[in-house]
Amino acid sequence: MSPRMRAFLITALVLAFACQLSAQSNQANTSLQVTVGPEASISIASATQTFTLSGTVFNNYLLSMPFTYKVRTTKSGGSGTVVATFAADFVGDASGSGPLIAGGDLTYTSSSPLTGVTAQSSAIPAVVGGAGTNVLSFGANIRSANDGTAGLIDWVLANKPQYETDSYQASVVLTISAS
Image (tube, rainbow, N blue to C red; front, side):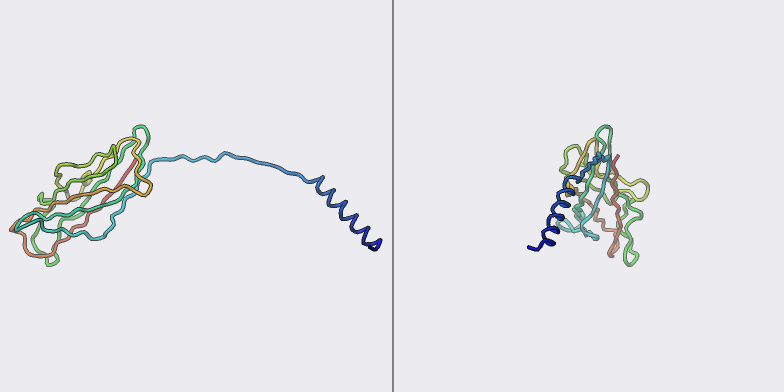
């Protein structure tokens, strides 16, 4: 090995050793914080729901409408609701005279498997406008499943002979709240 190469290698080793001796490290830390508050969301799987005739002539029309909700209410004193609101009554495609929500033709019951949730177990008349009607009520510290909890509204529509033949629609909005 040439003297020049030897000098270069010795210098490189000395510098590498010096760099290791002068290496420094430093640390910093922080605390991660989160405030988890009440939240709620709701979805209906199908944009259109269709009533079916239950049984024979002039039996009521029935519709089971599943929905999925996620909710978390405040641990102490929290509450929440799912409310069904109709902005308008049933309207026929050909302007037929048919079922009237405002006339008491539509009732419902509701259910949810979540402990601590109050459902409507006896038939409640639906209403048009206003604040709507409670479908489910939540108390304090209610927490649904991570992927949502199933709810169900069973609608019963009276089948009266005075309805004109037509295809009728009414839009319902489900609103969920949590505090």
